[in-house]
Image (cartoon, rainbow over all chains, first blue to last red; front, side):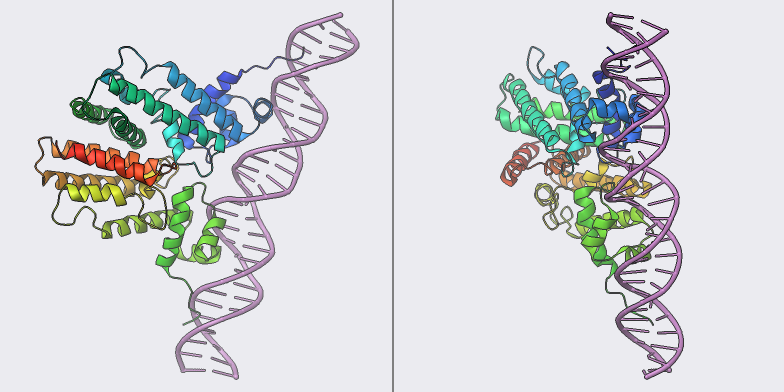
Length: 184
Length: 184
DNA sequence: AATGTTTTGTACCAATCGGTTCATTAACCG
DNA sequence: CGGTTAATGAACCGATTGGTACAAAACATT
């Protein structure tokens, strides 16, 4: 059988993710990734093709875990889901700031094409989920258009997590937005 | 007197900016900057302290040129200024996408502190300008809160310029937003 | 315990990173 | 034209980059 490895794929992704999250793809060095995961290059390159692959898998892991939370699929659909999504969406893991996928949009020029595709697809699905929740509230305004506005707001909110604004001011801002959209 | 140099500071910044803009700070190499500016390392390091300095000066140059446009200071103050700001703010130079300052927020962890300070200050001023324009329209809602919402929306909008969404859909989204805020 | 298998750690690789040094070249002034 | 001054290009620097090769070490099986 041979020697058993003392790490599992998911554990590596869980520890590699924060590195990519906070440093980005270009500035996350193999050295950092070794330290964070506790697996050295030999192990990493045995498990993953290269740095790009590790990044893509980390991204997958991130989005899957986010989906599992079901922030936008809980019944009953409606504004409450949207509000919860805005509030706990952009900071769901171990003190990381913002949204990993949104952060990565900055690096599209140098990201593996697969990563770009994953993020694009994820945003598209997100928009649909938002639209369904909004639709359920039967607003005056077109649900799809409103969903796009909310997604853009979410994107901005995620970016602003990168600067040291207080958590309370962010919460207040979300409340302000929700007050508005509930009337539309 | 000696030999005159065949480049001027502003010309360098103008050509270095797109490199930092599209590649970010970490992934913009000295080699790229040499090629783009037409000035080699000798010249660059004679004019600027280091890469960080060149980045900071490029950022300054960017924000100054943006201010010169006076998107939010044109009289009369009001929603029209806000709308113009959203529409032509995030794509003001040579086919670049999004907003350079917003893009850079992703890299705060590795940016020179001065760059962080500049961007933070710029956003603060932007918020004030937005608030003044909103105040002029005497909305029902608190102008400062509304200004924050618009700034967040602008941030998200700038990020979304990085993905290949059609310009018309962005314009439509801005129209939708303006329709809403004008009623508040 | 011997064997076979697999995972480790280490050394190594070329390429590139930001940055410096210095000799060469070009322009101006007298 | 000659001398001074300053800008240029190229060679060079150590450190780090992502990535590979390989021998040593640790386990499971017989």
